[in-house]
Image (cartoon, rainbow, N blue to C red; front, top):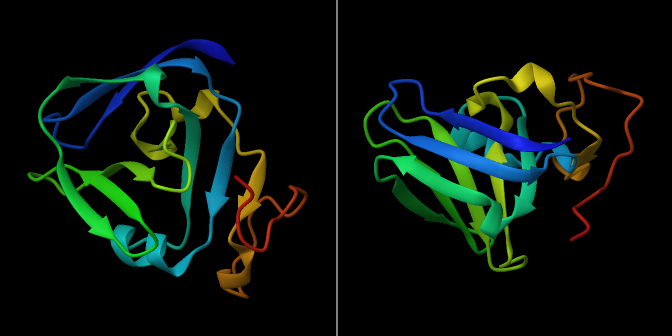
Length: 133
């Protein structure tokens, strides 16, 4: 899907725009994503960093293990984006914060080595033990 999409946090303090191909979408099962989000899995869309623009607000940043900087709303706490040193030209954005998350669909699972054994989600998708960059 090549398009312009927008999204933001729950309270509306942060708004962003994505421009480009929204086809690299992965369900992440790593324990770090679980801990920082409070969810069982985080679904990310990855796109070139030049395709991402903050429209409103200034996010807070948490520099997490594994060389990741995670951006979230300092007001409502919504986890919005992630930058990693392993892929400096791309950005990961949480699909759940898109204005229309129903328009995109996951294409793979990543970090399945950490997957909760009782969680069954999109079983037919390809799975990566870690993540190929």
